[in-house]
Image 1 (cartoon, helix red, strand yellow):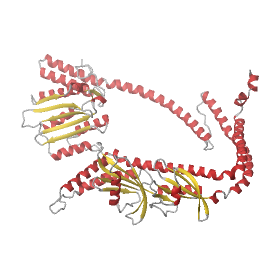
Image 2 (cartoon, helix red, strand yellow):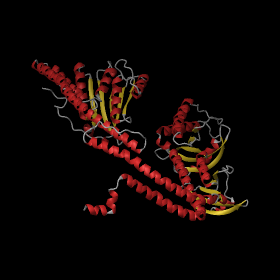
Image 3 (cartoon, helix red, strand yellow):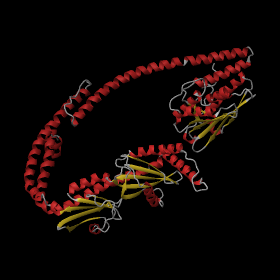
Image 4 (cartoon, one colour):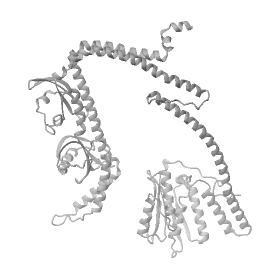
Length: 636
């Protein structure tokens, strides 16, 4: 069997050492192809050079147009960004409403009598231009971005500080072109314009309507790209082809030309343009007694056509020299390749053999080994990763020991932390039973209710979710205790749909709000204070309202409270007001996201209303109610 394996060429190749394999591979992929290619090239180079140039130039044109097309596609995507930025749409709506009102209020003499609201205009300008600066930095070359409202009022930003002086005329042109569209992006070819820096500039533009959520137009965005974004592409193309380039659109307007003498003019009558029929092709023509080769191709996306003019003498300039040196160069390369393949095969396999030895030591349990990295090539990177892997394994072993130790310590602390709550529950229960034996039913009931509230309050983590019914029970217990303290002074009204009673909600959401209403809203002139808790479901959210008929608050206090709720940093504590509500608001946002939270409405002498917005019922699981032994029950 072994003898047959040695005679089989496939098995002999698989058993070959790495050095021999590499040497064999180098011989196959270097010497043989070079020999064949050199022989073919020597006989056919002069004959095929023009055909290869045409094909190569077409590929270069295709690659260049792909990059330009990608850039224009990016511009179109940039022009769609305002549709996803609510701040821009909101400020455009504000700008439209403001200028609509100004147009509606006209004096008898035809003048506008609507007062200028400079603060509003400045707010709108900052809101839009701040986002424009962000949009402008997304893509290199989009040096100016303009956004207009429905009345032609422009907001813009430019990287180099240069903007169009003819912005009003440009807006009319753009608006006329996109009037019949439904939000699609339109591409405008190169235009000449004067900038506010007193210089003449050229740019092509992508324009798109800005639509609101109801697909109604609320503005217009125009993204200017300086022609410099395609200059590098054309320069590289001309350098490779040794010719000049001309780019035109479907109407024959010049997008760019190598001499920059025909920018923004119409060249549809040019003889060369007339001959460049179809989407792609090539032809010869004589200009000033010199034979020229013209190659052209059209972008399927923008319909821009690139025409390259190459002097024929440039195509055969180096053909003779190339034929003479091809054979000598081939022989020299083969010799160098053979020498390099021998050196590289030994240099490549030596560190690999060393690493194999280290791996065998690791397999035997020795993690103290280390691969000495001498170079930054692939072998060096592999050695670095090998060393890091061993360090990581050692670190993980150490971490596992520490985690197990910390886990045991945490379990002991958790067991100890359960002793104190149970001691409090049992002590309260003992006091309650003693009060009952002494016929003090009010004290017994208050202690029982307090025990239930304590179980609910500290029976779990503050961010744990419980069924809504349990939170309502907790508020009922709180109001019962208040009525023991102030007999029949408070009355709680509930209006909650039954499906919401199992809605999952974080602990202690309502009680701090009710406590805040009692503490700050109790009107001594009224015999009774009513507190309502209501809930409703909508497809977008679940809304819960806690309101009272207390003394309410003035506009200044209400505004300060709502600003405190929306503030990023927690306010300094001054007295007892607002911190409880802020705590509830922050816990809602931490649990459900920044889209949800709490708002406060109030009027002096008419009470206060707190509106809580939470995720809709269908997006959250419902919870089964806990048993009395879990919370709120009597401990024994």
